[in-house]
Image (cartoon, rainbow, N blue to C red; front, side, top):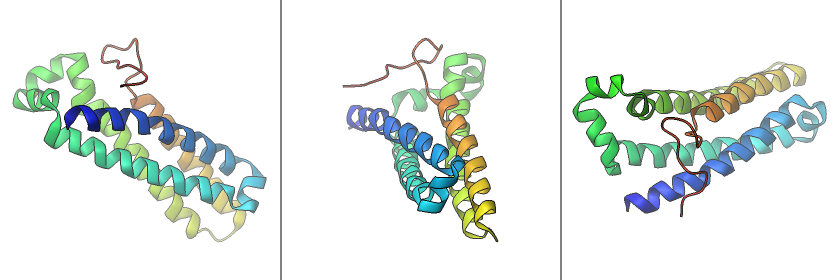
Length: 150
């Protein structure tokens, strides 16, 4: 079960990255805001992030033997850069991305003008996408993982 959920989490990350980039580009382009593309891509972005969050929480709190070891000795994990990435950095940056994407959609709905809606979406989606990209365990990092798991 752990291997399957980990592989699924790894593959859906690419859907989240793609929809995050498309939502950000659509939000920054005036045409995307007028055509509804920013809202549509934003919805897909939030859905992909929510699925990733659920899978990540399942891995973090239930399935991962690595997390279990980290949580058993949290002090030692904070001294190890790879363990610290998984215990704190990955979790915080990804939660930030999820929260910002949701906040952006809520703020956009409450915007008084289409221009304000576009700017709120653009800013929130940009920061969310950057946070997500910063929290991915890219190959070559101390805590890096393969780009694709099988």
